Amino acid sequence: MTGLLGGGHGLYFDAASGRTCNLDCFVAVPGLDAEPREAELVQLEVPFGAELVHYAIGPASCGVPGLPAGLVALWEAHGRLPWPRLVEPALRLAESGVEFPPAHAACLAMLAPVMTMNEGAAIYSPGGRLLTAGERLEQPGLARALGALAEDPASFYRGTIGRQLLELCRERGGLVTQADLEGYEAVWSEPVRVPYLDVELLTRAGLSGIPETVPRLPRLAGLSEKDRVLALVDVLEAPSAGGGDTTNVSVVDGQGNVCVLTSSLGLGSGDFLPGLDLHLNSMLGESDLLRGRLEPGTRMGSMMAPTLALDGDGPVLAAGAAGGTRLRTALLGVVASIVDEGLSPTAAVARPRFHPALELVNAEPGVDENALAALEEAGRTVRRWPAQHHYFGGVSLVSRGGPAADPRRNGAAARLR
Image 1 (cartoon, rainbow, N blue to C red):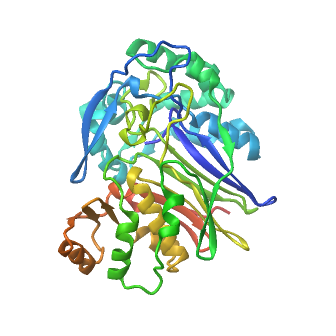
Image 2: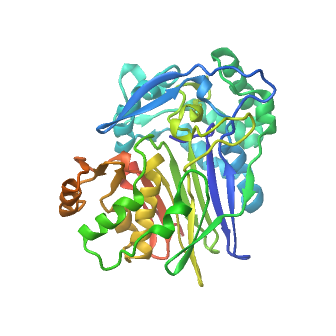
Image 3: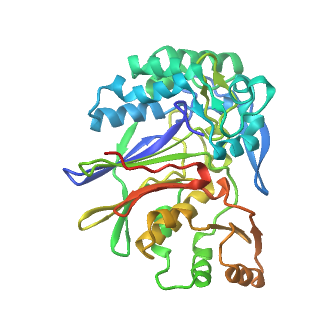
């Protein structure tokens, strides 16, 4: 659910200066130097557990990719390795293939109508059968794409990969133009600062709602599980929509520098660059992101919210999340569990989640049953999910108490010496 033809938002804390900056490398609205025309999108519904989520895909759903520019901007500002060396580990994985994890196999079963369209069929259903957990995911074209990227960091915008993207758009009705690619730039900006208990949260504004919600968070320390759920339900209530097709990485190095990078393709358009195995993003078909008039060259809105918590001694935790409209619920639930309630990072991420959406409350197994019964008595509908699920977002973080990553999305956490 991420890839080099997507977009993202990052946050970087420089330990030497104490300065934090946000990086905007999200997708831009296409159509510079082109006659306005109506996008021809393919409409479909995808089952996320018991919830049907509406999507619009196809080549015309692809916005101007920003992630390659963002990775280069991070490297130019803060990188220490030579650029080809930075690409090398991903290139090796692309050459050898990777084992398909159980969480990805479950997700593929939900998204098969999109992931097996066009060129995706050879990747995700070789021989006409969907990949299952433990089988090998082979993307030989991705090795060629990464090889081109290693040789030329600008290849996505002014080189071979950009030309192939433009050719596909011309053939299949996409909206991205040469002027779009040439005019794209990653942008650094100041973060939004929000006080929270004994820390300060640094994050971004936009569609996430994080800066607006934090001041409303109740004190949770000492509450029973029932009272905790009831205290959070109204604060975290949000619309119930959107698949939340996002990936997050949080890193702290030996010098105390911190980077959080959240990226996404959306669901993906269903089109892959032939011979390169690169999935086009579908951000123009993500209904949750379509707010107001879309002007060519401007950034699309995003719910991504890379977040850093600081106290007088420096970083307390760095976190980000996936989950679309559930991103805020997942991220703030974990941050509050650590900062307010003192849970370990692993316990905070694994804690059963609930997501209130208008009159409906979705709940994983383990959410306090007395609280759910009280919500039903108050007139809300409670949907009890049979297991932890991709639907409830994915959080990854590093903190003074260690790293943690979400089992709902095959997250992984490690200390490297």
